[in-house]
Image (cartoon, rainbow, N blue to C red; front, top):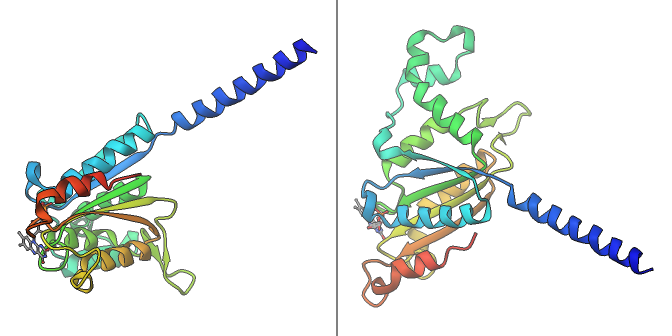
Amino acid sequence: MRNETEKLYTVSAILIIGNKFKTEIVMKKILHVISSPRNGTSNSIQLGNKIIEQLKRNYPGSSVLVNNVVDKDYAHLTDIHIAGYLLPEEDKTQQHLDIIAPSDSAVEELINADIIIIGLPLYNFQMPSALKAWIDHIVRKGKTFSYQTGQAEGLLTNKKAYLAIASSGVYSDGPMKVYDFAEPYLRFILGFMGLKDITTFRVEGTALPGIMETALEKGLNSVTV
Ligand SMILES: Cc1cc2nc3c(=O)[nH]c(=O)nc-3n(C[C@H](O)[C@H](O)[C@H](O)COP(=O)(O)O)c2cc1C
């Protein structure tokens, strides 16, 4: 009887260790999209890095790819971009292929990622144009969304997204909430591409006396992933 009980404990211990080991070896591919030009002092970058720190703790061994869209300087779309996006493969010229190469690699980065973090400094109640340019390069028919079934269908499924938003005003609640056009739009366009599991963290109120003194600390401490 004693042996049977010992055996049971041993089997349970192995199962527990086995399951624990299973959760610890999950590695994620993280894509960090940066759109602040302020590098070291940027609140949205610090917030994104805090999210990554926690993700790496949860998923040791995860990899991080940074796409700094300010440095990347994605072009405004031209007629050649649009033709390059829409033409059948066999009809694309070398000029089309060359001009859509940055878009192709931005799309590939998204397809490869398990978790996408988008850093967004609020500019004039919207996202910075560098981030909007990136969006114009990733919303691609047949790659990130499809109309094949007659209805729009997002192709970036089974991924998690975090928004790291920085603003000098407060938009999460209160009278200015309706004037944040960045977060609702970003949630919509990501959802259009199939990214529906989205969590937002904010560093906000950094120019408002009484709030600004602790805004960064409060924002960073709000991160739980
Ligand atoms: C060009 C520009 C426009 C801005 N527009 C807004 C705005 O509309 N609302 C707001 O609350 N803050 C605005 N800000 C303040 C930034 O959102 C704030 O400084 C934020 O921390 C910037 O993000 P970062 O620290 O990641 O660079 C603006 C800042 C700049 C430089």
